[in-house]
Image 1 (cartoon, one colour):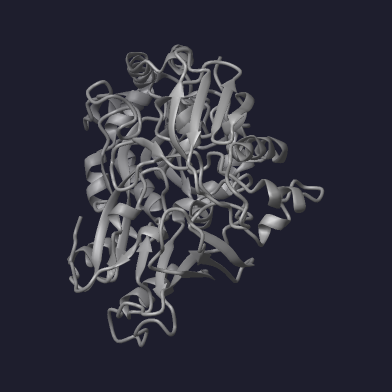
Image 2 (spheres, one colour):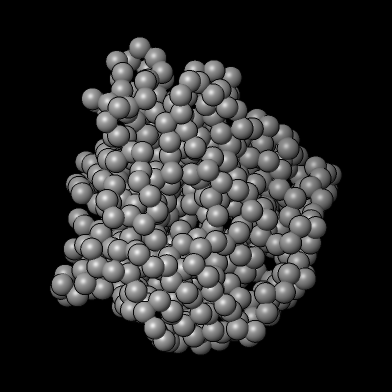
Amino acid sequence: MTRSLPQRATRPARAAAMAAVLALAVSACGGSGDGAGPSAAPKNGVLRVGLLGDIGQPPDPDVYYAGNGLALTTNMYEGLVKYEPGTAESKIVPSLATSWKVSDDNRIYTFVLRKGVTFHDGTRFTAAAVKTSFDRRTAVGAGPAYTVADVKSVKNPDEYTAVVTLKKPNSAFLDSLASAYGPRMLSPTALKEHAGKDHGQTYLRTHSAGTGPYRLTQARVGDRYQMKAYEGYWGGKATFTTINMPVYSDTSAMQLALNNGRLSAIIGAVPSASQARYVKDHNFNSYSLPSFQVGVLYMNPNRPFMATAKARHAMFDAVDWRSVIKQVVTYKAELATGAYSRGAVTSGTDTKVMKHAPSALTKYAASLPAAAKKVVIGHSSNSADDAQIANLVAAQLQSMGIDATITAYQTSQVFGKFAKDPKNAPDLYIASSTWPDANNPYMYGHVFWDKDGGLNHLQCSDTKTTALLAKALRTGDMKTYAAAGKAITAAACTPTWAYANDFVVTQPWVGNVKQSHSIAEPYTLDFNTLKIQRGQAHEKQ
């Protein structure tokens, strides 16, 4: 009864987003921008939003399945529900649906829709758009299509009621809708007029058809993107009316621009080695904002060294994770205390003891012949943090007599080759910041722990865990999810070692940052709710 997500080989750009950056910059005519220090607030409502590399895919919500471009898709398109911004809790709140009811068997979801909403082309938002949008997502068939794969029918008793019936019970369906990659509502008029032979994909490369606070006005691949505030937006008037997003290729240049006043903020891409400087510098405000990103250690059961749960436990406990966090990711991570991402299950039901006990691994290594003590530690070639952590782990293993070597891997290798041929993948793979699509315990557990999970790169799984996750999906029972967490902890497959945050640095005039950040949407903010604040707040959160 498990619902399968696609293997992440279909979404390679997603992992590259772990190095993605969101930089807000004062426009050339809006702020000081003279390189003399912190900038003045813009007077013309224009911000520049820098993108590190191109977004990799069109900003079409039924196609886009990465991270860098969430700054576009989450500001142009809206779903029925969303995760509440400005909080560490995974609370689902209204968006284009004002209320909803769920049947006792988690199969029928009835939504009451918001009135007075229009799409960017002026078309009224009604219940008919729900079916059109769901159908279009299925027809396009890209990575995000799994979020509506369980939908059996969508019916409209009236203009502002949508009844979604699923093929089978799914207690995680609301979380799928609230996800940054959940189905977004698109204008039926625009889709009909510009359908072409690809369900409007060509049109949505350079236009938007959503209900969000911003509409797409420029899309020059590899060069720049631009959004302007949608005048008919139901949620109120934006402080910043134009968002210019030039494409950058160098993070150092972006930091320099921030330092000399040409940029107003960087989100998610300040190297950990530079973060302390911004925390201590009162010319900037810095934030470590909650997300459900995690640091995990992948251990390969298909390689002799990590073939048993006992060996994997010894490996995980041998690493001094507290030291790793302190030395590398001090300002954007904290020690994990459970099997799931932070807050995915009821408080107190997901606990584990983090200990540094290298003796078991030392004893295990001593029992092996020299040829069997070789361990390959992998990390993403896009992450300086992961490279540093891999070096720390290798040094710890070498002190135990283990021949540890380090290899950097491209995104295409991690998502395309590891799961298909785990015997030729590394023994260990370090990831300091990865995330599921939503903070539902099933959606977390499935992608990391099930055989067909999109983030189970090294194919470490446990049959008991898989059965418990499938059972919990039908009922939503937190005790069953807690049992699944205990089972996977015993199996020692892909354990969490850190809860990761979004590290944000801004000029002092950028206001309402915390309230504009969603736990569900890394590397972006809701531009519509950002404000200009007077004076320097010197916030260090």
